[in-house]
Length: 174
Image 1 (cartoon, rainbow, N blue to C red):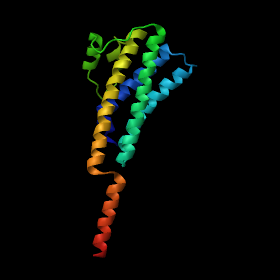
Image 2: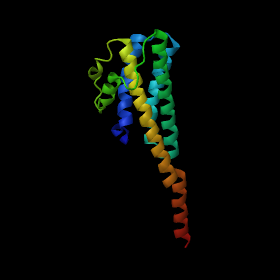
Image 3: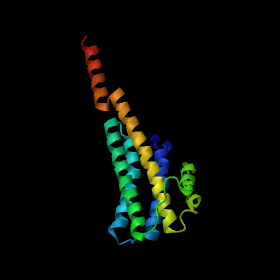
Image 4: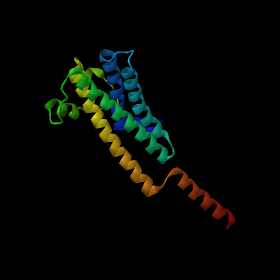
């Protein structure tokens, strides 16, 4: 099985996935396009982390991680829009509640009860999601930079396969 389950970016994606579904069930009209879009953006974000990490091709991993980042960027905007349309207040980055959420350690164990003090009404719940999605986007940006650096330094799958093929042919015909 892929090492993606050990990635913090994946572990947080699982938490976001579970919380987003709960939020949408509670606060978004299930018949609306917004409901479908928020569920699909969330699914895309998580699943593209998985698919990218299982790729042999570093180029494909970078591409799929980029899709994940874009999906989470879209979902983040949905939560910002939710607050604005409902006349609710977004919390600043320096707000003590945001700082408290940021300190929360994400683990392999998804436990929604850990977040219950943030999920009892729409304003703190949406702000929780904005904080988690902002952190997820930061982590994905870091991951993309790391993957891109690795690609530049080590080359891609096809390039390295071609080098091995050329070495094999050289040995065979020498």
